[in-house]
Length: 126
Image (cartoon, rainbow, N blue to C red; front, side, top):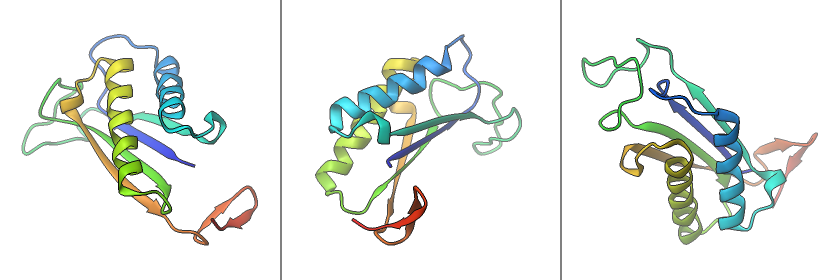
């Protein structure tokens, strides 16, 4: 853990997504001092017609108005300062590696509770 799940409409320009997700993971590791092997990043594209903002259904990721959606899942042992730093880092990493504006990124942080996580074959406590 942490898990960084990113969803967006398809990008309007060519991007090597494997390089983007690994770049985000590396930057997050460097900035938060969490070992890279514990960081998971996914990026899924939302099919055309399956994302609406009001009555608009864009087919490609706009530069504004329809944000990239990020779900950050981390242990509940992190402080508010840690969480803010993580979200800022993710926004900068996405913008820097994909060309998406920081202003068009929405991040929601969810907390995993000790004893409520199953990982590596066992219930995890921290």
